[in-house]
Amino acid sequence: MSGRMKPGDREARRAAAVQLFVRRYGRVAGTGGRDANDRTYDRRVARAVRRMSPERFDALLRFGDADEPGSAGGR
Image (cartoon, rainbow, N blue to C red; front, side, top):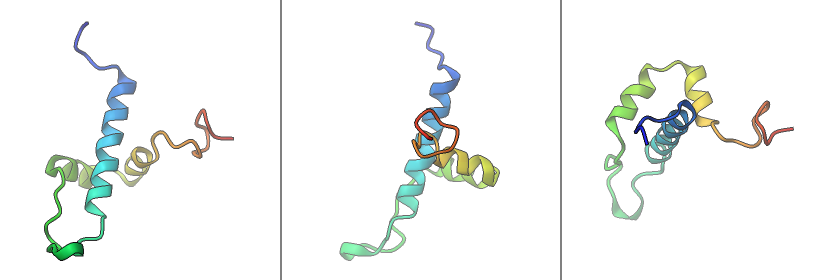
């Protein structure tokens, strides 16, 4: 085992990190007696998202969607 990731695996992990970031960052805060600014998210992913192009961000958010045109599951 070489310890290196395949390009597809790397892309899947990057997409999962961005999707988790968006889920955490975009959740409704202030419910259940919590402060609106108590969200926890990965600051490294936030910095990477700010620097990436809108097209790249969209592609990572849609990574693995079966409804995406051109994907193996889409029609």
